[in-house]
Length: 153
Ligand code: X6L
Ligand code: MG
Ligand code: MG
Image 1 (cartoon, rainbow, N blue to C red):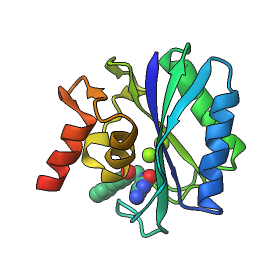
Image 2 (image 1 turned 45 degrees about the vertical axis):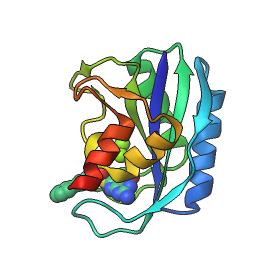
Image 3 (image 1 turned 90 degrees about the horizontal axis):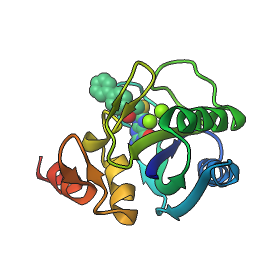
Image 4 (image 1 turned 120 degrees about the vertical axis):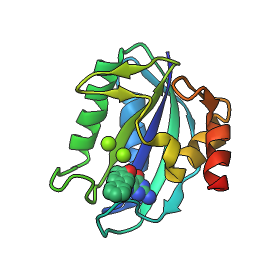
């Protein structure tokens, strides 16, 4: 399955954290990283004052099902020293499953497509760079269309 992962970091060496996360993804059984977007420095979004982020997106091919992919993402966050204190607070690394093929998944553990991705330029800009035609199965629009809609607001 083709899937897209959003990456973000605003603690420590942010670029290196993202590069290491991509390396660990690539080393994970059942995952191949096929595209990596440019890195963007972005203003923090949310109600917590914190440092600027580096954000990026990766296209992967995976034989894992979504729960397995989520477990890999969590393990990589832990391996890179993510400490879970305040919700939405600063983090060394955040790995979010944005899209998993064109599947819609809603469980208590996991929502795919990622629930806020269509409202976040820090997600849509890198995603559109590597996959302008990636399709959001709930909204029925591509990444590029969603990004253009954000600009119109
Ligand atoms: C009111 C309350 C309005 C909360 C918005 C928005 C919360 C976004 C969380 C919110 C609210 C988020 C990143 C980030 C975060 C990132 C950049 C989130 C999760 N992650 N800002 N803020 N990049 N630039 O990866 O998206 S926290
Ligand atoms: Mg996130
Ligand atoms: Mg996350």
